[in-house]
Image (spheres, rainbow, N blue to C red):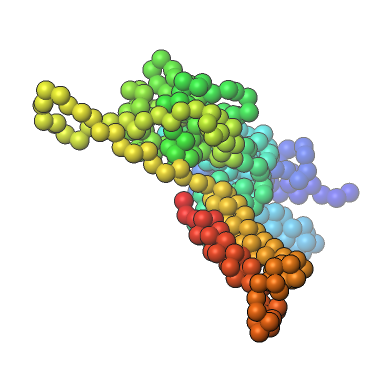
Length: 346
């Protein structure tokens, strides 16, 4: 009969074998005191070493290894959190503001492992991306799930824009160039504030913009950047709504006059997203290619016999191999598309 070393050497009552790390190190369940963990390990390690020679040397070495692994797990913060979760512990790792990291939220939801959480953090540090962008780039979760986790981290509400219809009264007050620039979408005019869907925490510029336009503070909620861009494309389509004028910003005391005229700023040029710029450049390259190819084909198969051969003197017939239409029409068109599309900036 095999001896139960856990019971005989460590005094652990009969039960599941092998016992969990806390039972093995004779600790209370979910002990968080690292020094207590190390102290118990050191004492038990010394005790088990007494059996390191003789007939129980193999059992002793195996148990020493188990003790060491348990101690290393319970003294590593991230490994301990993962282990405790496996034992059913609800790990509350919120900071002083009551917020919890994105990776912790996703681990609790069973969407990523602790190894993946470490991989995300390392990738974010290496590339300079935010944790949210890094986890989406690594394709561990989709943008909507990442937005939910980010909302948990910053202590904001999450909103799925596919489930609601924004108020026209709210969107009419904020022009397209503003929502594009800040990647946001006005949703509702509430009694005390303006509810705005944002991909990130709003900066002071957006807060001031909303306060000046509505006379109320912003109440941000979190949505994915992709859903915001789609909602902007739908709700700010060309000709769908009239652009609101720029708000008047106070710049100190104005001189008092009988008739004071307020000069409105010119509306800013439309701000394009990176995807729109890339799409425009691709179209420009296609237009440039066709503006060269089509005149060349016309010259070779149509225009030389019908036009150029009749117009040009015989001495210039050597120009048969020169794409005259391409030089006269194609090149100017290609240059125009380069300037309007390929070279276009935000």
